[in-house]
Each structure stands twice: as C-alpha cells, then as structure tokens.
Length: 152
Image (tube, helix red, strand yellow):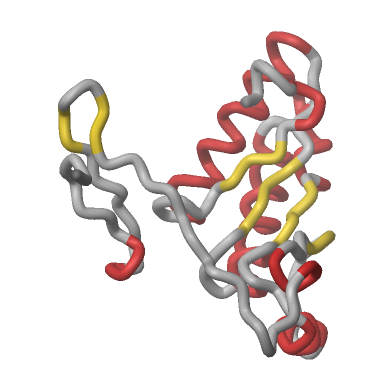
C-alpha cells in the first residue's frame, strides 16, 4: 500500500498487537519512505481495542521516534495522524469526548449509513488458505482468531 499510495500512507496497525508490532512497523515503513524517497507517511488507523488508550500510547511512541531520529529530519512523525474507526456511533463519540485521547479524526462507516434500530450485517473476510497452505489470523482477542483451512 505504501508503494502504491506513498503520499496517502495511513496504516491499519491493530491487526495483531498494536503497540508492540503495528506502530513499530508503521514507523519502519514511514522512516523508509522518508529516507529513500523524502515522502512523509500520513499516520495510522485504529480499528479495535481501547481507542483512547491506544491512541495515547501510539502518540507517545511517535514522539519518542521523532526525538530518536531528529537528526534525520524525522521530527514530522510526532504529528502523524491517528484515525479511529470500529463501529463508531454517537455513544462511542460521547465516551471518547469524556476521556483523554490522541485521536485526530474518526472513520464512521456503518453507523453513518444505516439505522442502528435496523442494524447492518457486520462481516469480515479473513484469509484461511494460501497456495494450498492453511493460514491463521492471530489476534490478542481470541474471538477474532480465524480457523485455518479451506471453507467448502
């Protein structure tokens, strides 16, 4: 994605482990884009977990990275945008408003175009096999893990 859309690179970082894996991987790609192409990455998207907490931890990591690589002109990374999504509705927005967070913008999809009294069918596509080899989606949330194998 970063190669195809380098000036719009917004990474989904919460697929496996947001703070220990997703955010550091975003920083690695962002630093590579900056070092080798002088392209500034845009930021990250959080789509699960405690959005307020994760946004604040991510912002701390961005600030630390900006300081660590300041001599390479990487200070801009401290201002990386943090976008939150994950079935955001009015109640979630009000809750986030009442607590500290570092979220810059919200991605509101399902609840923008459907009535919550008549809910939409939430679905996720997960890779379970690649070239005949089973693949498993790992997650900190047991419910989000996939079962590897061909599906009929």
